[in-house]
Image 1 (cartoon, rainbow, N blue to C red):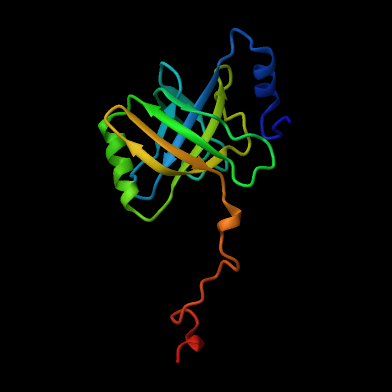
Image 2 (image 1 turned 90 degrees about the vertical axis):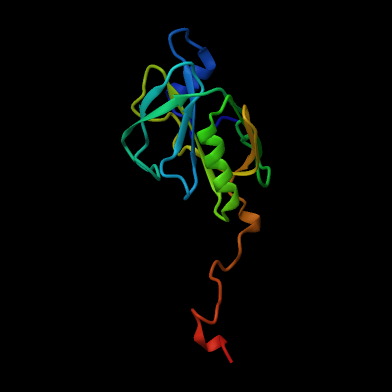
Length: 174
């Protein structure tokens, strides 16, 4: 089943695999304890590309992605209740390990945004909207960071989303 979020140019690049066009896979890792997002590209050279207009940080700006070996399997386009994938970052520096260790102590979630770019067009990602995942079960050592990432888990969201507390609703207190 084709993914309707992919641009026509990216679909053609997947189908035809032209020699002069490379698909550049990028990740943005974000946690509230970070001063800046961690942005990486699966390539041998750094990448400067424009983010989409709806990006949560630096929208429509040209940003840099650091070259880093990583592996991920994109979630399938099917009816699975909560697609989950494995993410592996190889040869990570101590600064990434330290940032993820600090994030693991916090109660806030770690977000990952996957954006594909084409080497011939860096004016925006070729997936709209980009895939946003939540990273969990993170393990890190001096050379590799691995974790499980999943899409929005609507089945485990509270309903209604309002938490009824005595502070917010004084009528509940006796």
